[in-house]
Image (cartoon, rainbow, N blue to C red; front, top):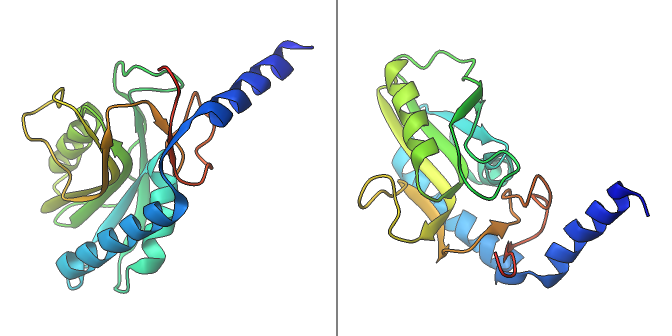
Length: 188
């Protein structure tokens, strides 16, 4: 067996052994609730929606068809994790390519863990002149290590335990963003 086959088998094993924290219908219902709350808040705001790549891509793709109002879409790419299970230095791969000056901006990401990445994004957008910055995350990981006490997104789909998760946009070492539902890695 080559190294690639062994690695792929390990990646498959991670998924096979994982605990399902939220199945597909539960995730879909959470996105429906988020969409309803976002629509109430932003219906007349002409917002710019920014998908945070790569994790926020799937949530954004599932959320947008549920938002029945005019909006503009763009993206940014910033990470603290890369393919690791522990966060590190914040790395900006791409800033938004749209004028943010005076705009209401909705930042969409997969998970609020500690919050360093989300706070860095908010700081960057403030510096670019956004008039209002709102945040939406599929998962708020429940623990007491937030970057700021009481840090919360403006719109949250699910509150889940402090486990290493994948699926619905979240990854395990670059894999399983495509897994339906949200799963916790065994023993990690």
